[in-house]
Amino acid sequence: MVDAGARQPIVAANWKMHGDGATLTELARGIGEATSRAAAEVVVCPPFPYLERIGAVLDESVSLGAQDLHFESAGAHTGDVAASMLVDLGCRYAIVGHSERRTNHAETDEIVRRKAAAAMRAGLCAIVCIGETLEQREAGETETVLERQLTESLRGLTGDPAAFVLAYEPVWAIGTGRNATPEQAQAAHAFLRGRLRALENAELAALVRIQYGGSVKPDNAAALFSRPDIDGGLIGGASLDAAAFGAIVSACER
Ligand code: PEP
Image (cartoon, rainbow, N blue to C red; front, side):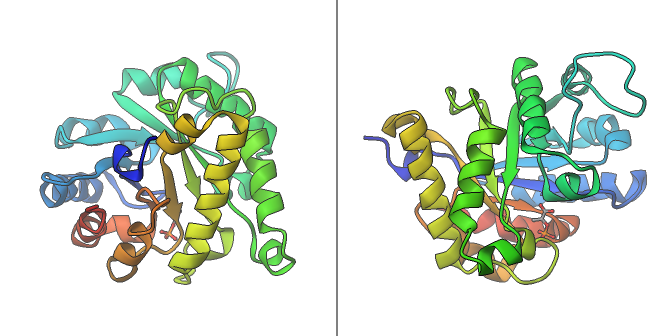
């Protein structure tokens, strides 16, 4: 039987479309210093134009990740970026299916699945985001939505627990300052682990890391990350401050 201790927590910084080369370089250095002795795995996901520059200054304990990618390996896709290009730049992770992409770019579960598959084919670990809207939660549809997003966004892709990380990100908690309570988040994570057990097997389900994302801050991180099925976080706003992000990473001690 595999227990939670077998999963190294993972905390990823999603810088979205913030900053410039100089401020993000300084932020990357600060994050390296603030997290160099972390028990958790630390990932930083800068905007595309700064991947190379940030990769060059990142502490070797910190992994580089991309915020998105295209599902084709090459071709006439103006403005898009292929998985192999991200690998070339030193990326080890790629976020797919973030709710901002699902909303702003009309990404469906099928598109997310193709992106996750492309990332995995190139050797990237896909951070696959799923989560319900407030309307869906209030209608009692959270588990139905999570089940659909999990099975469709990762259809046929759940066989290797090292190839993906699930990020449970309730849409209503992203950037709102209103985090899911530790109880709400733990319930969602336990549900998702249970579905992975049914889809694959108990051992695999016990190995898959499930991050929580949505208004994680230094003062709520420990309560969230101490729950048995919460394996770290995907951090937006608070990842733009090295000290705050460092404190969140430190809250992962198991
Ligand atoms: C996110 O964008 O994935 C996120 C969780 O943002 P924030 O931490 O700002 O809510």
